[in-house]
Image (cartoon, rainbow, N blue to C red; front, side, top):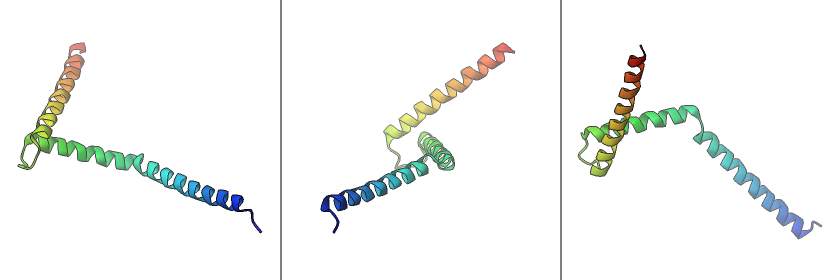
Length: 88
């Protein structure tokens, strides 16, 4: 005859292990470099599509945000290039 407390603890331990395994699997998926790269590419494409404004369903706030982000990124690249050229 097994003690009910031990049975309950074993059951809780199995559930905790299953939860931990699911968490590890999810983290492994989220941290996969290929997945992160493909998400970054897709986010970049979406940003450009929003900034260009070809989609009439694009939220105006998203369009403005995309244009600001691309403008800041362009300015940063310009400053880096100017700094490199200046050192030459």
